[in-house]
Image 1: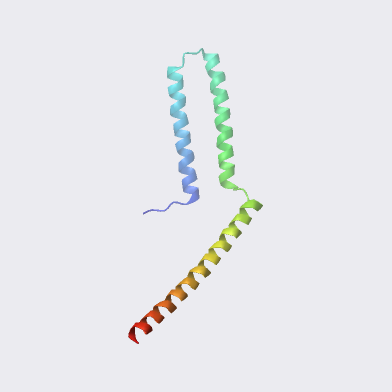
Image 2: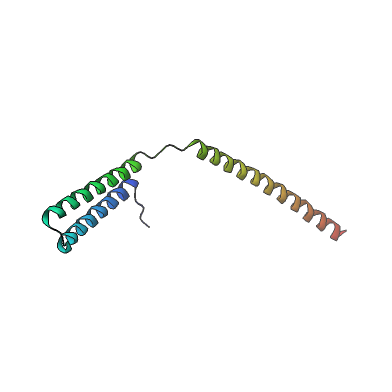
Length: 109
């Protein structure tokens, strides 16, 4: 299975968005029941919106936000709980091993 880098995925996603926007733009022009002036204003507004959304998505991909204090605290709590669960699991395994040995020694005696 081929793996893709973050940059390749970003380029592919952006290319798909641009292609979809162009197709939508052309279809919109073909079926628009508006006058030329109204259509140009509406398209200009939509293109501005699309540009702002695209810029925001690119910014968030290129500069991901730092984890918040709550997220760091939550991650630390999860790591601590996993460590405690592992310790408990090891204790249970040890107790089960002791019980098996006692049962084996009492059945052979």
